[in-house]
Length: 429
Image 1 (spheres, helix red, strand yellow):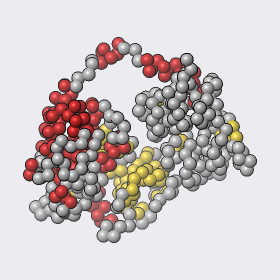
Image 2 (cartoon, one colour; image 1 turned 135 degrees about the horizontal axis):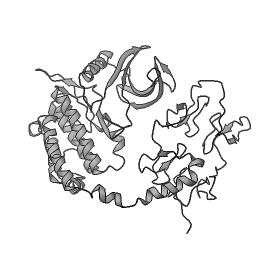
Image 3 (cartoon, rainbow, N blue to C red; image 1 turned 135 degrees about the vertical axis):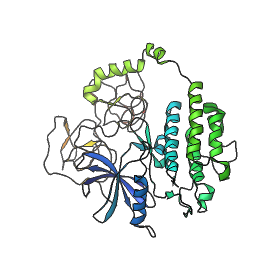
Image 4 (cartoon, rainbow, N blue to C red; image 1 turned 90 degrees about the vertical axis):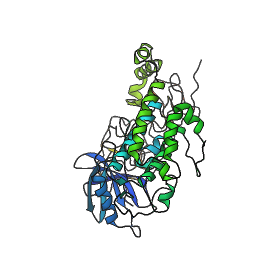
């Protein structure tokens, strides 16, 4: 297990972002290219060798497509076999926890089928299609990854029953994967996307969530999914290429049937939310440093906020947007190089990069620990020097209101939730 800030060649480990039966995936910083990457490092597993992962690299390298993860590098570093890949924002599994608009859902589905269709066109069977293996990048851009179980279709196909049990096709579970096996797994992924439910064996229609699927997308799209997850491989689409052809036709009809009001009409309506946010920024932007937009509702938020005060989303500030020289490997908020701990989440310490102390005009208070007494910035939850919890409630300059739960300062005239503990804020009338 690699630690935060540990060096591995030109990479500096930031945090572990995923752990599977065969490998760990870490977020790392490329110190030469000055960019963040994902590092896949195999675990010492019996009957699994580095040659198996080399085969994954060879398969993934031959697939060059906008919706397939790009491998940046693969090499041995300090006795580790390291596969460097593009780093996305989150997996499709993470994204499905939150609400998705119909348009975005159709677009994500289109990209998922397109990626698998390209792999099938190049005679590659993925063998592990699941939401965790679709990574979402900025701009709602989806990419397929993890070809560790992939098989290349040749005259005699030999494969194991590898895969993820919730999405695995019956014939693949018995060690005979086909192109139709990937179609089956993708059909279950799409059913979960569109209905919000993952059906269970034996997949008898109508399944759980079918009412929502039919009401939102109609029988045409439901028909594609139903054909994709038939138990007999011969009754399914022969591959994702054929499935993609049908989906494109249905997608066009779905967009026409769910045509929303024209953008010209929408622009005529004043956005009361934006007017409210603009008024809030005038009063509190300097005190709270609300220069960021919530990743869900787009309302103004700051790095220090634990929750969005407008919609209640946890950790609302977007990733990779900090003015600090480094980032916490757990909560990804900005940290200074001389801090020993994150000031916002309680976790193990860092490898301190320097003994030099850097002054900062944002330091306005001191730690309550008599042995420490180091400076603190507003709205810190913990002392970054000794990890002592900040007990004295922070006041919000320009507001006399306090949260009734945590007692920290809140903008009661604007907020719906406390940005520090998510307690609903009652406005005075």
